[in-house]
Image: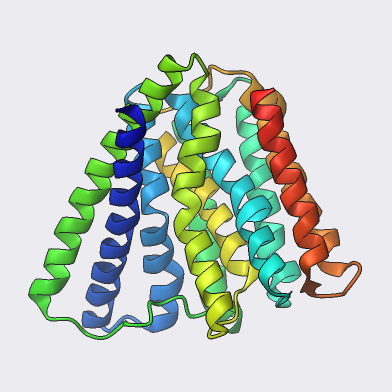
Length: 311
C-alpha cells in the first residue's frame, strides 16, 4: 500500500505541476506579462511546485528530514543523474552565463544554506526570509542585465486559452498537487517505518528522485527531438530555486529542524561537492562542452552516493 501511495502521489504531483504550469502561463499571457518574465518567474515557480508542496507539507507534519532531504537529494539528482543521463545521450554546449551568473549563484545559495544550518541544525524563519530575498534580488538582476542568458522555458503550446480553461487547470492542478503530496508523504513515512530506514533516506532517494522526474523527462525528450538547446542553466536554476524558494518559503512558514545528523555531516557535503565539481568539468577536457565522459563521472558519483546511503 505504501508503494502504491508513493506511485499515485508522484503521478498526481507530475500532472498537477504540468496543469498548474499551463494555468500560470495562461494567466500571464492574459495579463500581457513579457515572455521573458513568465519564463523566469511564473514557470520557475510552477515547475518547483511539487518540491515546494511536498517540503511544506512534510515540515508542517513534523517530518523535517523528508523536507530537507527532498531538496538535498533533488539537487544532487539534478546534476548527478539528470545532467549525467542527458550528456550521455548527447554532448551539450554550455552558455557563458554558466560562469557569469548561474554557477556562482548556485554556490552562494548552497554555502548560505550550509552556513545557516550547520551549527544549530535549524533553518529559522528569518534565515528563510534571507534565502527568499536573495532569490528576488537574483531574479531582478537577471531581468535587468541578463535577458539574453535566459532560455525561453515556456511550454510548446503556450497559446492563449479561454478563461474557463485557465481556471480549470489552476483548480485541478492545485488539487492534484495537494492530493499527490498527501499520498507521497504518507507512503514515504509508512515505507520508512515498514523497512526500518530513516526518513532522511526515503526523502533523499524515493521522494527526491520522484520530484526530479519532470526535469529528467523534459531534458531527455528535448535532446532526442534536438529541438531546444538543453541548457545546463535550467538544471542549475532548478537547484537555486530548490534552496532559495522551496527551503526559503518552507522555513518562513515553519522552522525546519533537522533530526538526522547525517544530513548535516554527509549529505549536504555531497551536494556541495557535486555543485563545485561542475565548474572544472565544464572547462576540462573540452572547454564549454559537456560530453559522455563527464556524464560517466557524474553518474558514477551519483551511484556511489546512493550506495553510501544504504550501506
